[in-house]
Image (cartoon, rainbow, N blue to C red; front, side, top):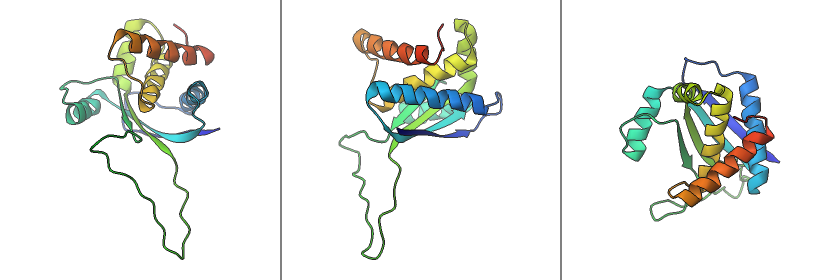
Amino acid sequence: MSLSIVWNNEQEEHEINSGLIALLESILQKAGIAEGIDEGEVDLTFVNNERIHELNLEYRGIDRPTDVLSFAMNETGEDEPEIIYAASEDEELEEVPYVLGDIIISVTRAQEQAEEYGHSLERELGFLFVHGFLHLLGYDHQDPESEAEMMSKQENVLAQVGLTR
């Protein structure tokens, strides 16, 4: 399986260490297996509430911070351009990673929610990460049935890595 995370830390409130990244990599592998996804790259960025607030307003028109945003690269819609890769006769096409999309997590909000729900920051970040990953695959929670499906999938993956409530 070649699912991977490319991550970036744009906040200074909480340390992002190698143990956390390894945990999120494990979550990605388990979620990938559950969803039949065996290759791809997820770009993960950790931000603070101020930055996620800006992004939420810019991309969703919602004027407040949120916990996680997902931007799928493989959405097909009227306004989505087709991506075409080309090479000249003299060169081979470079291997381009299959990017599933971007997940942006407010570590500030994750810490607030972890305290509110009475569990660890790692559990909350894991939850938000798998939640964002499922959004990249097209899952949503607009009605009670789809919300229950997403919640079940999230909790199943988290249980596999020992992040239960």
